[in-house]
Amino acid sequence: MNPFFKHSIVILCAAASLLAGASALAADGQLKLPNFDLLADKASESVSITLDPALLGLATRFLDPAKPEDAAAKEAIQGIKGIYVRSFKFEEDFAYPKADVEMVRKQLSAPGWQQLMQVRSSKEQQRVDIYILVEQERANGLAIIASQPREFTIVNIVGSVDMRKLHELEGQFGIPKLDLEEKKQ
Amino acid sequence: MKASEAWSPDELLTRASAGEPAAFASLVRRYQRTVFSIALRMLGDRHRAEDLAQEVFLQLYRSLEGIGSDAHLAFWLRKVAVNRAIDRIRQETRYENEPLTEAASVVEETGDADPLLQRRMAELVSQLPPAARAVVVLRYQEDLDPVDIASTLDMPINTVKSHLKRSLTSLRARVLGTAIVDDIQPSMSEPSR
Amino acid sequence: MNKDFEQQLRDALRPVDPEEGFEQRVMARVASEPMRSRAKLTRWAAGLALAASMAGVAILGAHQWQERREQEGLEARRQLLEALRVTGEKLDVAYQAVNRPSPPPDDESGA
Image 1 (cartoon, chains in turn cyan, yellow, blue):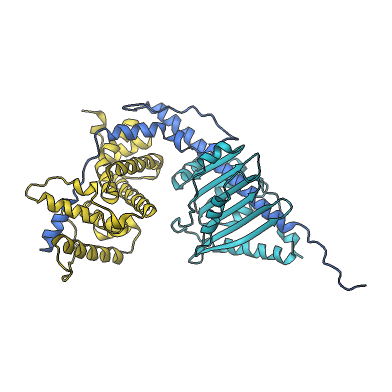
Image 2 (cartoon, rainbow over the protein chains, first blue to last red):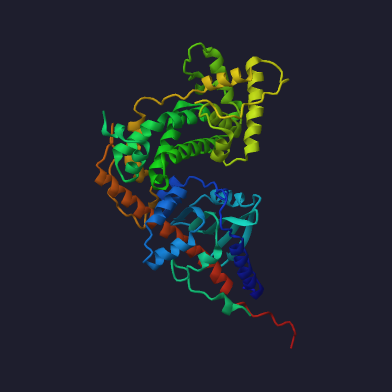
């Protein structure tokens, strides 16, 4: 990957973090997700999570500050108003309706949404797109769309997203420890 | 008399938050008319209104700990009911050409008032755009003043007043079948409850 | 005249009651609501035994009520951690791409 792009990612992450204001605006960053209920029956693995503000508040009350994982989670979700995840894995290639994934991607061309990062791997036929919603100079949403022949994942986070705090979940939740500063050339 | 009927409104809330089902049931009884009516006037259909009203109380059940007083509860219920209804309407985007709705036919007899006129007015309210409809319902059904309406809908107060003025003018013209020639100035003072 | 019209509007919009039994239907839904709104976690199916939906009046003992609220809270926490795990997994793909060593530039000097 071009070193310049690496630098760009660092700058963009920093910019996105700076944009995350203290007070989140209304949850306009919520995407309209297709109904994947029938798809879950075909999938070998599926994750379908809908945490609206009420459920998120409830979850937060049950986070144990004594546990590092819980403490990190609590820090990462400050300002977030909703988290929506749809993730499916299949036994066969393209068993999922690509049109549904494209329908979600299309919503990200609406005003305010900006593409933060685009990763393509021709070898694995993998595609990951990361978008943030910028409103009145604040980041009010995050969307990740990741697809491969046998799986796809849509993540939509609504509210004041702090990419730096998400990045600081290093070591937790499968995010590897990474010191981007050392990688600068 | 049920024990729950002897509790004050704030005590009901405290007990419901602490996990007493009888207290929560009392809260539902206390506010079901308000929540259902808002849903009905906004959605124009009894079944959808009941469904939405049930969802509002389910959300209340999840959110009890965040509500500090009976006054806050009333505000919260109106806010959630009307905003959920607006979201529902916008998703469906059918409001512009709604035919005669059930909401229009549900009019409580009020003595000397003309039931046909009331029915017509309720029908016309149900045909207003969502935001204007919400303002009119909160003003004339819930008797909220414009400041409270603005707070409930997260709307600037001037926008509230503008909706009221335009809606009243439009409603009056359509009810009376006259061209819009006069401006109706809605009363902005405290309503008599 | 204006006040008359506004009063007519108030009369037309008088609150109305829902169908009889509304309270019972709400309580029945509340009793079954955790099962319906819980996210499907096929990998981490918690197998919580929550109270089933009951016909008619669903009044639970305070203890059961508290217990269910605690179960709902723990379930919501599990969902949150899972959501963050999935988010992190996909961000990881992007971070790895950023930190993959760059291929050496082509040597076009002809030397």
